Image: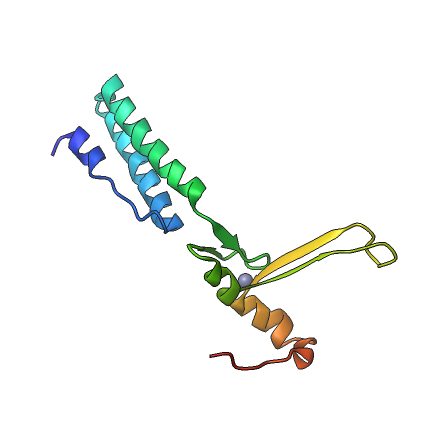
Length: 132
Ligand SMILES: [Zn+2]
């Protein structure tokens, strides 16, 4: 398989950030290989850049949610994942509060929610009901 064919065969799942990062790494390896083998021609450079830019474009379109504590990330293809697998606590504190004009926000994954809130001091105040 020629170098051009190998580059054109690079495909990725545009809903999976880690998969796209792996493909960028593959492209980087291919570029290193071309430079090492002295085959890094303007045509190869153009093909590599084109593929690279396509992946970067898809990464920018992807929405990712990150836990503020453990930094676990997850791609969110729909708003329901954001609401069912992460918790966002958010407030714009007003005058006469303890935090005048401050915006506070934290996103927690389910594991961190369990550790720091649900099984923590506040857990006993959390109202739990079934919704299924
Ligand atoms: Zn977490």
